[in-house]
Image 1 (cartoon, rainbow, N blue to C red):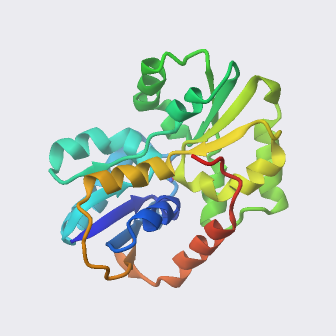
Image 2 (cartoon, protein in one colour; image 1 turned 135 degrees about the vertical axis):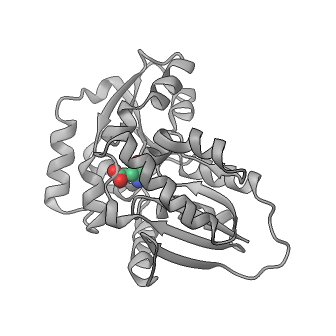
Length: 256
Ligand code: DGL
């Protein structure tokens, strides 16, 4: 049986990239809902609808687990999905907990889509960690569009990030949490724009480890197989592989 990865677009490949390192002998389906990306600017109802349609499609593909490799979809739909389907559903959680654990007395900047920042799920996480005074939040929504266009280091990307960061006093922060799976492509670009003492964290490795815990590993080493779909249409692997190559070149992330 296969493991399905779902995202609004190519962001979830950053999580699959981590899963492949620790679960290399699995069959994967990667579903990019690129016809409907971005999700972060849509209403909760629209997102819930799109996610349920995609999951209905994936359930029919003989899958043993589903990774919602999208913070926005997780924020909006994971509770209802778990109440509806009995297979293991692994969602994303912004890495606020690990960021705070290693923090001294400076703050953590949580970067995510507009929708993730609005949703109760993040508010609850912050409340449960008693972290209201230890975090700030920033939407980097436009990075989703840049990633979909395969633009990571272009001057307009750097200008966008510089403008978003302009009002921040970095001396008061010691970490940035990438709370959107599309943002991991930009770790080197972000790294080049912020002081060295600020660590960059994502939840991708943690999600991959969680998937491993929830999935019985196969004993026979058959190698990796990945099937790709763009909004329910079978897609060519080439357009996805260039994103993996991009990730192999990216190294600005703090070791988790
Ligand atoms: N990859 C997404 C996330 O993790 C969704 C981005 C979007 O479509 O706006 O939030």
